[in-house]
Image (cartoon, rainbow, N blue to C red; front, side, top):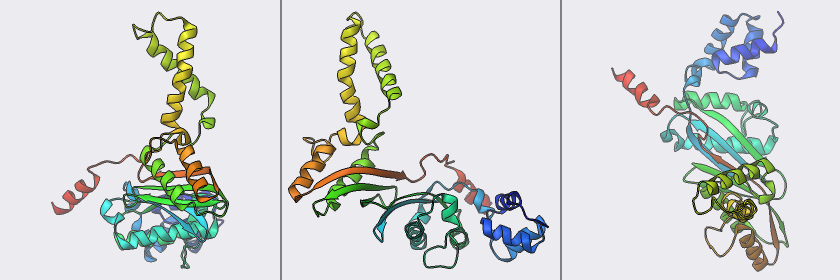
Length: 303
């Protein structure tokens, strides 16, 4: 019986097991889904299926330079307690090493890569972690920079992971500069890196809001429209300073913007540093978490 990709996908959704293992089980079971599930359970692979449905919003955001490549990953768990587990932390570091070694094009591709230092795929290693730790563990996302100089920063033991990518000239060590910029990103989470990235639709919306605010202000409402427009243009500089990293006030020295701090610090070292890009991962952001999930589960177990 021919095994289709849809068959494999359906089995994966039913069991939480990786694509390759599902395909092998279906092939061995000659397409019989129930038999395939039994095969996976016998191999210990489907034991984590029930846990796979539980919300994993804790975990760790991790950033590092591995073999010269900058990598940032987020791996989720169900509780903050597990995020401090050494085996979990080692797994996260292994995921980062796997990204560096393989440069996968997508999360799906990463999950099928050989996990660093193992014959298992990342999916299989993740399933082993679920069995060992007893919680749903999930590799959620990653990013890497293969060019330029990358500087990693991890805040609060993995609550936030930031990777800054810099073009460095003059043979200088820009680690401290990169870390300062990464800390700024972690703290203020700017919407844009530079004001040139602010799109016209964003500017139009900001101008519209500012004009409405002036119309609602008794002191400004009767001013000529061209005067209001002029005031709005001036206020956009404040918008840039609040929302664009390079135009923000440098948190460690308010006399500088981030851009001017970088230029000054690089010049003092005898070179130049140009901001290229950055990635900021905050663990669990965007994941809807039910605060009582874990407590309710524990309560149900002791009744």
